Structures are given as C-alpha cells and as structure tokens.
Length: 253
Length: 194
Image (cartoon, each protein chain N blue to C red):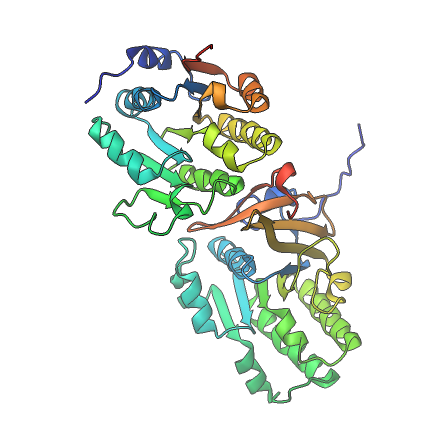
C-alpha cells in the first residue's frame, strides 16, 4: 500500500454534482483554473453554477463577462433551477461587463500594452479586495487575450492575474474557448494559458454515431490528486451532472 | 382491462429495494408482464417509477398502460425513441423527457439520476425497456459495460431496477452479464425450441 501524505490543502468545495468527487474534495483554495471548452460544451453553465454554489454558502462571488452582455448572460442562466436572481440582487453574485470596466478605465484601444494589462489586473483585484470575493469567473479569458498582441504579454497578464487572485485567497475559473478538445489539441486558445495556471478542466464533445455527448476531463490540478478520466456531462435543470464515460464509448468514431 | 400475472406480484413481495431484476419476456407477452410488474410497484408498494423507453415511444406506452388500467401518474418516462422521427415529441404528456437517441447511454443514466435526486424522499424503481432495443444501437461490450454500471449505480442508491429483455433475441454476451449482475429473475421468456 502506498504511504499517504498527511498534508492536505484546504479546498473550495465547488458544490457541482460529481466534480468534487473527481477532484477528491474540491479545488485547492486560491487556485486559478482554466475551464477550456468547445462551443456549447457547458463552460458558462458550469462556471455560473460554481458561483451560485459559493453564494449559497455565504461567499462573495464575482463574474466578469467579456463574451456577452451580462443581461443576456443572466437571461440564459435563469432557465436553470439552481440559479436564483436574488443572489444577484442581494450582491452575493456581482456581475461585471468587461466592456463597461474598460470604459471606466479609459481603455478604448483595440490592442493592449503592458500598462493596460496592469490597469486591468489592478481593476479586477481591487474589486475582489473591496467586495471580499472568494470565487471569481472570467468568461472568457480568450476574449480578453485577443486584445493582447503577443504570447509574452498574455503570459504576463495571466501570471499577474493568477498571482494577485491567489494572494487574495480567491479561487478563480478562467473560461477559455477552444476549437477542438481532442487528444492532440491545445487546452487553450493561445497555448500559453495552460502552463501558467494551477488547473485545467477540459469540456468538449464526443461524437457517437452522429450524436454529440458532452464530456469533462480534469487534465491538471495542482495541490490535489484527482481523476484524469473522461466524464459524461449533462446540463439538467438542476445544473451540471456527471457520470464516468463508458470506456468502450469514450472515443470519437 | 387485462388479467395480470399474479405470480409476478407475489415474487415482488420477496424482493428488496436494492434489487436488480432481470425480467425476461416473450415477444407476445411483454405488455402483460410489464403491466403485472408496474401495477404492484405503483399501487401496492406506493413507489414512483422511471421508465426508460427504448422499444416503443413513451406516449404509446402511456396510452397502452391507461387502456390496461395502470395509472401512470407516478411514472416518469425517459423516451429514447421519439426523437428518431419528426413529430414524435409532439404530445400533451408532461411526464416524458426525450433523449436524442438510444446511443446516448450516459445521458440516459444522468437523466435518471436527475429525476431521482429531484425527489429524494420517494422510493423509486427504474425500468429499462428493453435491452434488445438498446442492442440495436449499441455494440455488445459497450452495452454490457453500461448495464454493469447502471445496475451497480442504482443498487448502491437502494433503487430497484428492472431490466427487460427477450432472452432468445438478446446478444449472448449481454445476457450472460445480466445473469451475473442481476440479483433476481422474473422469467416469462417463453423460449421456443425448434
């Protein structure tokens, strides 16, 4: 029998059905995790449920929406039973439009330089610090990175952001849009996010005889042992549900 | 109204809540066996059921059960058949949920778990109708793996499962695995030996 380590990092229990079991207890506190997925794979729903579960436990949560206006985002998640608009009204989930944030910061350029990146990281961390946010989602970090002209700056941005959020004890999900979730694909749009961040969860589809089945796979999570298997994922009215994917059915045909 | 098979009701009284029953039917008596299974579970034991339709559409099953005097109010249907043809999902029933295809076995599992978790206080049973229909779409070893996972998942949650099959039309490997996994057998298979 393998000797077990006595030390265990405190966990942010996601509250998402199945995910905490996959992570052997949850995401280590203060981690910055990439949620990389193809379109329609359930990234936004999973990320929002992560915040709702935190808010229901009394945590302060923040959602930074870069892909769609927050009004549209909230309209889409209202169909789910797990979502309660009162959590937003009561300020337990704070939703920010990145476009509005850029406008406040006077960042109207189509391409960001280092000063802009510093200002963006400072604005996000100021909000986290002021509200006492312990769970944060940026959906999507890919949209933000499109404004950053080179890989080095993207790496700097993510490193600074992750470090600042971690220092503040904030567990963060950075949603990333990818075009393929196959074995040879990158886990991120720019190929640099995956190396810097603490964890990577990949969401995608398996095609089985013309039908798409959603899956989730935790590829990396520092600070915890975890399953690296593929799990089938379903979006139910109560939120995300997972079950181990059939071994004989876990490959694209 | 039809005359039910009282032997099935008698057998059910001796079966525990975490049991997995292999229900063998013949091509000519499947409806009678299903009614004889559902009636005591719903009426006598006061259970609610999740009925996974892979052979016939849920709407057809509801109408058929109604005609036999089986109240399907406490049955929730997961229909893997009706999305296979345009217009199949157009009906007035609110206790039917549709899955695109019987190939989406994990979705069937998750939707079943969803309904169980939506009403955790109520004792439930789950019926898979049928293994034969699922085997049309799913390769034998994947179906055997699925049934293995399916039965064990619900047994661990103390949910009674009934796996319906026509034994002389079920892939031998799948049937052998059912013999191994299931705790009980209701045998109305009517195997014809030529």
